[in-house]
Length: 297
Image 1 (cartoon, rainbow, N blue to C red):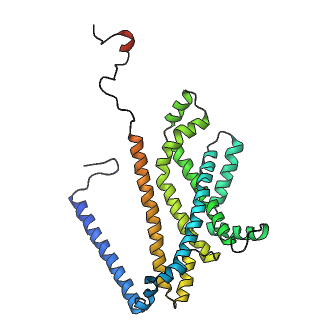
Image 2: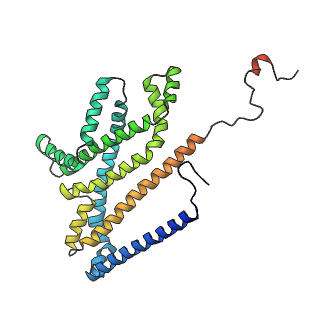
Image 3: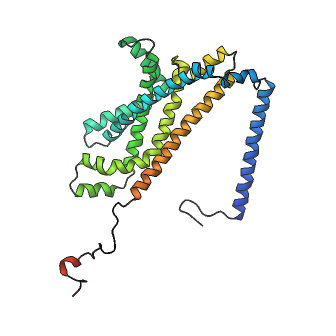
């Protein structure tokens, strides 16, 4: 069976895909075998290096506090960046140049700067011009950098999602007298949210991962920084600590992506619902109510 995107595969194409799949799986298995063998030869699979992660001390002292700081920075950045990005994206679609042009300048400026540079700039800004304590500056700097960069990216996602909707809907809404604000709030945004959701979730995953930059450069005590401290305390098991931290990051991002997928399916099902059920006796042939046509004599 053919589809809109591609034609149905023939026998040769199916055999070729099977062969490529087998080759890929063999290559992956060989790579994993080489990695495990190398770790074993270097003594990285020895039990004493992995034993700390099976005791509560490592988790309560290092991993859990680092995970809390990661979630704190990511949650604050998401809470601020999402509405700010929506406002900037909608502002770029404004009919007024005094709204549209400044929003475009802000978005293009912060979208072009690496997030690490924004974090370093934020740390220097809070140190020079604010009374924020030295203990809180890394958190403020990490959140500032994440918000400025990701709000700009989210603004472009919002703008693209709204522009992707059919123009006929805007024209129909204006024809019945809706203002631009009502059009955006009642017609365009509710439809665009479902289409934008995968891209928004991808950016939220980026926020979670980019918190590690604060630990690597700004001495923010997040999960990656906790791995370095923990490996030093337990005798240099840095590879084991990084593997555990990587698994935790994968679990966090997988949970976030799974929740977003569930939410997207729920929104799509809600939009397919027609609401009230109309019975056969409730339907009326258009035009016959006023003329009496089709009625009983």
